[in-house]
Image 1 (cartoon, rainbow, N blue to C red):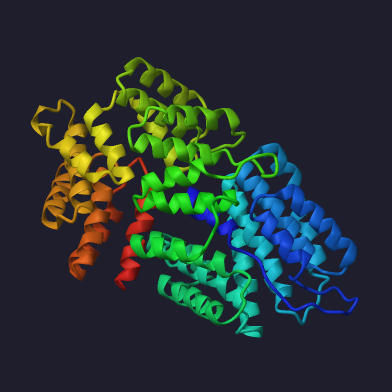
Image 2: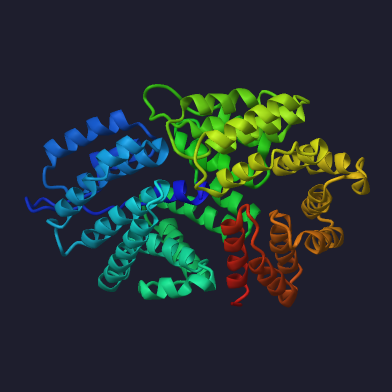
Length: 497
């Protein structure tokens, strides 16, 4: 959730030629484009001044209302403040009413309304208003489809539809009926092709949303195509400047961490822009804490504590205490591990996978096996040789707890996989499934997903399909939704159901 939701808000807007008529029109040039750039650099105070000037000089330009909505939704998505949410949510219908008075012959007339619905759908997910979010997505989807019939060559529309079609393609079969009832359809391949067409257009024409579309494409490759290296290449081509744009820093550092470029992620996050000119983004401190934890740097605690002090949000509080506990355990401070896990039980909410997993660990009240934990975070950071060397010093038969014996083979599989030792990785994953398939831990389910990934790389289609289907039969207490989505994406890539 943390990955796809924030980037979705980074990726929606439009551009049209200026009109000289006094009618209500849509024009994304001049101050409108400047305000857009300021908003997505989180320079909200500057953007407010630019929007005041835009309203004075172009009082009939309807893009003004779309830009104001971006500020509202980014404020809510990043800040996660429930009081602010209750205040700003009233603005949605006011903005839509204004947009509906615009030029109906413009391709931006329906697109801008759909964009408002999509922004609020993403925002509602942050505040656990899931039914309302689904209804907003339905409205956005149908407005975009209607707009496509009217203006088939309108690229901003195709950008958003491509994203929605790809995401719809990951919905598990058990929930397809709901999507069909809502009148929505799409596949990963369809969405990918639509976004690629937008990028091809951007290669030939001045397309204001070229960089945002490249970011969108990078996330699609990363999460739905499981193509990490290609995702990073596309991210690099987006030319997002992480030193002047906190949101750009989030996106680039996030993909760096997920593609095991942990040291680069740390460098990006340490060089991020800060100060009163930018809207506060505490989550970047959380990311820096996790990245430093991945290389066993005890200073990770400073950044995790800073996040907890700064955030006024709902999410990742339990996970932050879990990571503080891990840091304490890794460095031999077992009493502090239990203290942080006690805070994890009491503070924050368990609405997203990461917080749910943290809460489950806190409830178990069991100190992790220190070396397995070290291997885990090292592997997460891409320090595979160091993690492998550590695991080779352990004797799996000496572990007292069954969970540790299962985890040992799972960690070894992950490391062998990353090091290109395919046969060894598959053998470790099979052992994980044999011993952990009936347990509540996520190890077996992810072992099945990762086996599917490996079989795909080996062009062993039937084995890959079987692995993804096996993953969907397992119901771990941790990360279930995200793992099932990955399995479903794999089946979609292979043309299976």
